Amino acid sequence: MTSFAADGCCRVYCRCAILERLLPLQEHTVPDEQTGALGDVEIVLVADNQVITAYEMKDRVMARNDVDQGIAEGAKILAKGR
Image (cartoon, rainbow, N blue to C red; front, side):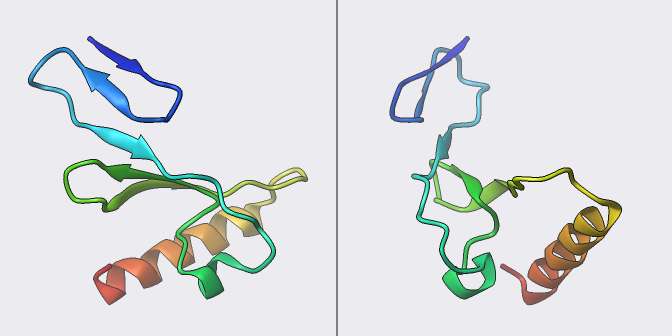
């Protein structure tokens, strides 16, 4: 069983869980590419602080182009070995 604290860190009650932590939200005044962020919301592994999940937020309805752009950006990150 796992529960989540207000600070975004999870508390684990079994040995099989993967510890994850939500990074603090940052001001969004420049593109993610300039800040080095993988998305608007990032979740990291507690053990090594590596981003394992990233979410991109939009204030409009998502279009097919948004999905295609996200896939292309993810492929670039994987190619760099990040």
